[in-house]
Image 1 (spheres, helix red, strand yellow):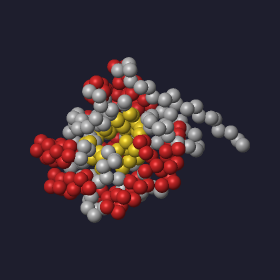
Image 2 (cartoon, helix red, strand yellow):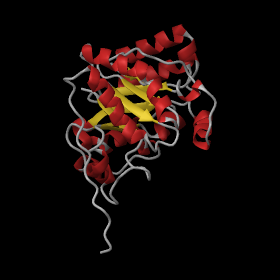
Image 3 (spheres, rainbow, N blue to C red):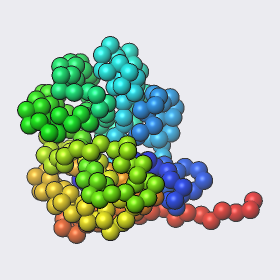
Image 4 (spheres, rainbow, N blue to C red):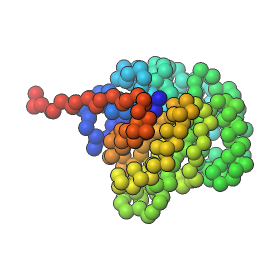
Length: 275
């Protein structure tokens, strides 16, 4: 299975109804990054609504709240983690992975903390870790140590591929803003589990974005041939074209893997009425 999606399920530039935007999004893509959970644990009723708007085969990658990852730095977070996992329980199998995005200051010297957190985390969930400290990408020993920690917990390493974004200087406000905020780290192409996740960010130019993901299409084809089920999230500096790009990426892989399960057909948007 190949899952593709975006960093959000609503955008002013996307064709969406005024209500049930997640339901509309789920007719375009079969996965989404749940970034809103970083700022606060959602209510259980909110998550029940998310589940009601998505088919059973839709997948969320839900980000842990910042109080766990950034404020407490994975220490003494049992109460907060338990509350979060209880809140997202209505997603059931739609909860593809719990996304542990760590701050840039989380370095190789903190791996013991990560190991302890993953060891104590409930095993009924899959975990995926995103690191941003340069040492994990520049120092082979640091990378190997992280991979060992993740392997013990059967957790995945989520790379944020910013190579295309940084391939040349920014030409717009959105690209300049992305240059300031996104991590500039080396590209990773190694899957640690059967469910690798990659976050890819391109540029304002659709052509440059598509040219930059050529390697990723080949990599996903290889992963599928190995029996893996990858998830690819498509970003651009302003994400205006991300929805179309996610479907275009899936189509590029499907051209090489004809047996790939198709994406749903986008739901038609009813024109607004006066009454």
